[in-house]
Length: 70
Image (tube, rainbow, N blue to C red; front, side, top):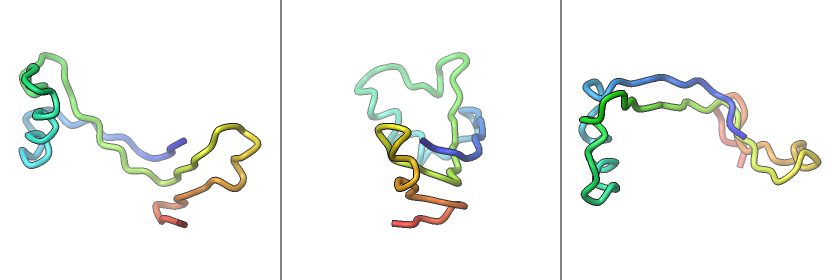
């Protein structure tokens, strides 16, 4: 589970150093920067928990207030 803030970044505003490797993962598929309606989502996590069930939540906080605990 991840808590944080999300920013929407338009394709023309993304750094090519980030967009180019992502586009290369598509292995010949269409470059998402040229796909109508495509946007990038940038997540800035503030809390991260790893868990399989609610019973584990108390011991599974890996990040709190943007700082790694492990």
